Image (cartoon, rainbow over all chains, first blue to last red; front, side, top):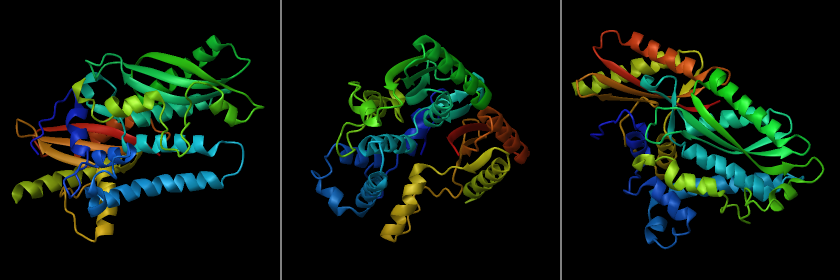
Length: 243
Length: 112
């Protein structure tokens, strides 16, 4: 493994290295992708190979378990939508995203995007009348992965709060947590209000009537990602080597 | 294999130092390690794929012959990430006083 690590592009070496090659020679991400895109039945190797089968069984078992537990939960939250969101998070966990610089550029300290985004989302959720959705954190300048960061967060907001005030509150909260609890350097934060939180109507309305493409329109919970997530997985997370 | 044993020793010392830092929940094995464990269970094979006995710490040599450490950790909620990574770096370097040149990359991979 003569990986000569490029200090400025940690994801180049580490995540190619991290991408697991199973004993049969297949890459784990390829196996998952084949499953995600429905190609796994086209290739007899997957059925025959114990390594690929085991990897797929893990993935399927996880999805099934999440769907089961959601189905058993009565109440207003739409199980499909919740399943979709949970699986998004699980996938994000499995593909943690690019490392983002902590502290000063020369320090070589990093925190993966998924972990940063989770803390920022939690901070936004702590504000009254706001719920955080997708949160992406990326270098402001893709040529400079140790530089300042750009946050783009989607939120659902209650009616009755002026959008500008709400966005300012979200920005202020994110800036506070980024500095006080994490230690990243933020340049800009975009807040996108993409849905309305209504205390009366159920979440079904929130997901189905928004016309925004929501979090989970697929009936089986597999076609889950928003455009952002799909794009992120295709070209953002893990392998952002070409940037 | 002298190289391997000294590498293991450096990795072990670094891991122990890092784990002792407040705010470090645990050193994180990669997803690869986690799945490998389960796959190994199922296929009842030994699968010594990486030979890395210290999950969360990778050790390499840089061009000048110094050690390059790559440490991945999960942060404990309530601690500032940057403060913890800086403390880990300090602790790791202090644990390897006799090593001439050590560069340390630290990555927070999760929060619990």
